[in-house]
Image 1 (cartoon, rainbow, N blue to C red):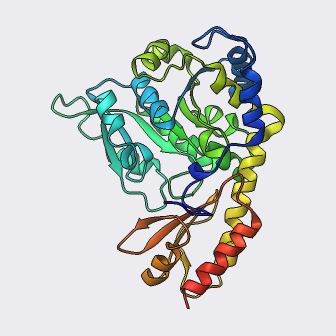
Image 2 (cartoon, rainbow, N blue to C red):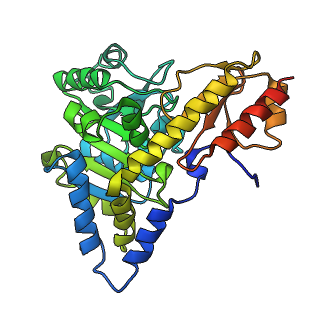
Image 3 (cartoon, rainbow, N blue to C red):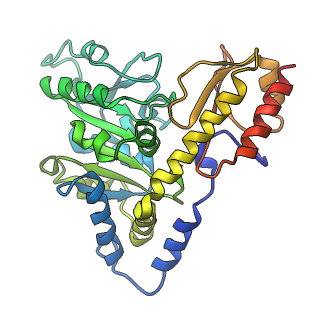
Length: 343
């Protein structure tokens, strides 16, 4: 679908110019393949500066790959992952986590997209029963698929519950940068420092061409991850071009600048549409997403010009996403179009 402006996903945005420049710079001359190059080693040090000196980092192509590798690192095929029904691993990865790992996903209804220890506990009955899958880890998404953000205290409480019940904690951080910007905290401060065992860290949704990373905060658990990455077809031969992107990402806090801007545009959009009587914002606007309901006829009219996703067809709830390069004019024009469609 060809559209001039999209509020469908932060995946629809282009690549930040600084990232493109970094890719071009890394293209000068040869480099040893499979991550054994200077670009990659320098970038790994930048990861460690944000997430901790002892972390293991495995750069990969995409988020689905990062999630599959994270699960494969911590769980065996007869085990299970507890997650929200909205989790990307459950709703938007075409069954890849279950197919590629053999693990079953045990889902929890979470109206705001966020798990709590009480929700997790419901799936712990039947442990040691040889007829049932055995929960091995919990997966939470930060920011969540509904645009909500876990507080540091909420993540810490989940981590403590998990570790007290012989569970690992995985964080899908495809939008971790947006969550960090919303909370005003560092990347490690809202993940490993709180007890997260392994993280899928995202860059594609925040200005990279492609590239995610698996960050293990417990290297003793990830000794085999280097082999899992290869087996799951996520080892890049020309790793330097993924590494160069993350190097630019971490330079002068570009990741934070991009995330703050995207979050600010979502807040601006929410502010502009909340006065439209027919529009109801249905989730707190904490990161770079606005979830709203509106009349079906208005939604259909808007879709003639703009691309966005309907999240719940029955309720006519939609998701509007902002990106690092969304402009105030685009937000203003979109809000005006929403108001006009509701008349």
